[in-house]
Length: 519
Ligand code: BGC
Ligand code: MG
Image (cartoon, rainbow, N blue to C red; front, side, top):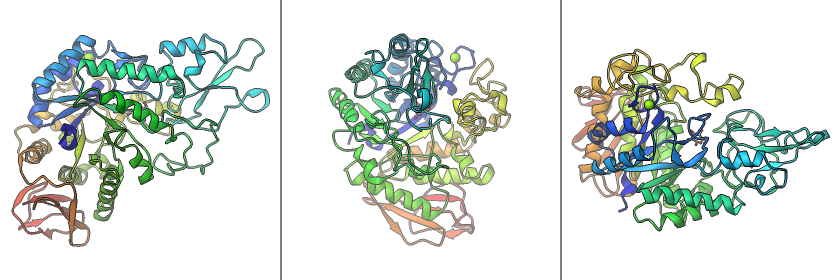
């Protein structure tokens, strides 16, 4: 068994976890100061969101130098100290690898802008002449994932039409050209740089992007497309060439025993998804099917089956997640308030009972909801790029409350970069730690059982018959059973001794919006 195959990995949104210097922005020293908490929680590893040198248009996912720490977050020394101390706590560290694009402030892109069309400097990105009269229209009709066109015009010298460059995200995130050998060589250098420092793994950003179809065809899908809609015919993503990139990554990582790569793979088709997990590609890929399933027993069960089938088809272990810094938080997604919280508790138990590894997102263990932020504090580039129709991801990125003292709630002695609402006091880690009925206590207990109880074994699940709106499954190599009641009435439990429930039983029955583990 490799360490990641059953690991619980805690996603740290570095900006929002803990601020050591009072500037209102989380940083590496802040994370180091909270390792005791993470050990107490019982996680095996951390995934740190991008902390590389960046002008922060997309809060670090616009990288100006992938081999340095942004001064906002610390420096390389602070990184080494965090890594060493995490390892002393028995916690591994996974870092982001951002190969689809750079920042416009990256030295390569500055050089590209300073050079002529057709130059080797421009060949590291996707520069193209425009279309239509006067070449005044973008080279394709592609849209940016954050809204607006995926091309930005760069004027030419007097009288010349200039060129357009491709950016699947904001215009400050130009896409790299993966047919260019320098791009390959540079990613390898970055991988080795962090692997040599001792990181345990890499989270590959936009793993389905990177390679682009040579002819750059127009996007022929229907208008009205949404991010969860027709992914299968999207010319921007899942180009076959992308698998060569993953083979390169794997090849380098294989020189470092015990290291892994987990991909952000937003591909709908099961067979296409599984290709990323072939033996010579990524070790893991986030599967968002469970996260995207509504809180209905049939939908959740179908998502689980689909994921298990997809991963098994290539002999890979599943990788589950209920959230990250890019999506609404679970409590809010499941309806918010007491019901959303009860459902999030139940879904945490469902997820943690499954075979494979689980990626948590900071604050999930506190049951944080999304925060309804006022327009004037929104920072996600999606807000501006969508013409103020998409509020973006800031609501799930509000800093972690550590104690009940506003405005910084133990996150910062200064003003947090996004305002923390008063209700965060009640949800703070310190408020929950001693309360046995809290979300934090549930996660601690569940993680402890998952790590130490012999029942959590067996690579597949068997489904039992269950009342309408409910399900129950058993881990294939033990009697550990997980039951979910997503119906509106209390139901009897399947046979076995109760190990843990997400909500107290009512006259021996499992209430609605609850889950139980039995042995
Ligand atoms: C990251 C996002 C980022 C995007 C572009 C995503 O997958 O998780 O936060 O905006 O990639 O780099
Ligand atoms: Mg700070």
